[in-house]
Amino acid sequence: FGLPVAGSVAFGASIVVVGAVFVGCAGLAAQVASGARAARGYALGVLAAAFVLRAIGDIGSGTLSWFSPIGWSAQVRPFADERWWPLLLSLATATAFVAAAFVAANRRDLGSGLRAERRGRVAAVPSLSGPVALAWRLSRGTTVVWTVGLALFGIAIGSSTDGIGDQLGSSAAISDALGKFGGTTIEQSFIAVVLSMVGIMVAAYSASAVLRLHSEEESGLAEIVLATGMSRRRWAAGYLLFAVLGPVWLLLVVGHTIGLTYGSATGDMSRELPSAVVGALAQLPAVWVVTAIGVALFGAVPRFATVLWAVLGGFVALGQIGAVVGLPQWSQDISPFTHLPKLPGGEFSVLPSLWLVAVAAAAGGAGSIALRRRDVRG
Image 1 (cartoon, one colour):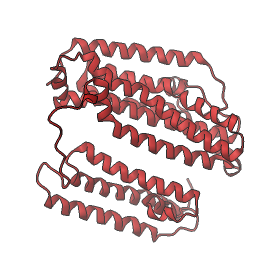
Image 2: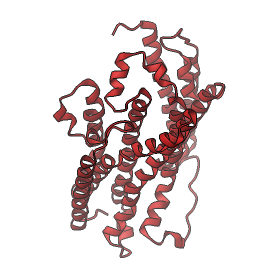
Image 3: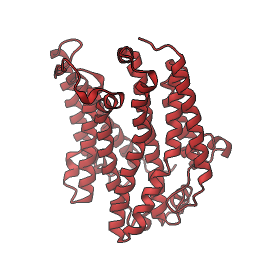
Image 4: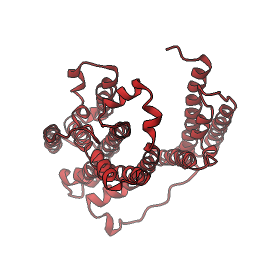
């Protein structure tokens, strides 16, 4: 593409080394935690902290960014008087994480982590007496992490949107690319692009909530719950409640944080806040289609339930990426995200969204019926 060699190498290296840091971090978390879920929580907690430090640092004086591996990556300054020494910070940190992981692996007992799990109660507390309470207990950590992460992301986006038109408007290519996602101004188009990305992220949250049913069945825990006399519909409904309503909450969080921060920056809160919230909630129909496909796969062919991740990836490739690279329209239309209104700033047509909700309801209903009729693995 005719880009400078030094800048290209610096850009690639900055991405590789920050990835190496979090690979090492995940390796250490796997040795400390006693289970995969706890290990993911530790690793994601470090990632979230790094993101927060970078975001706050960029908004302020920049000092806090130096405490984040993500901030080190930016300090390489690809294509802008490259600095190579920040790469050494990431390499040293990655090496330290990996070395600590090997030391921990030699010191922990096989099948357990350095941090032992706490013993549970002899009997469940009253608050765990129903399927919704149980699903909340198992999902609350993930939901809280997503909530905090997306709130911080929304604050960072909202605070950086004001004036972005001056930065990006000089490039006709960037303006044209952003214009494909809606909006009558560069700022609106930018927010529309961000919200389309958030829609995919929230769809991933919903997919993981649905696939929690699959992991519970594979581990044999579902059979234990169902042996108490609870119906399959009630058991599944507890998890699906979070898969359906969780995205509503997360999109409201993103919409409000973007709208509040951007509205404060522009002084037009009455316009920007509802605009951002509506634009965020407009992603829901496509998210629910992904949710419903997961329910259908789990209900009908549970051994292929994890194919849902490939389905979501395909939707992203056909919809979001396809619009940029110019794939044929019929292929883009396969993705439910293609049929969403381009908000804020674009025209809103309720009919495509209603069709998506109808498709989601049909697929989810079919999956629920299939679950009642098949055997549950134990």
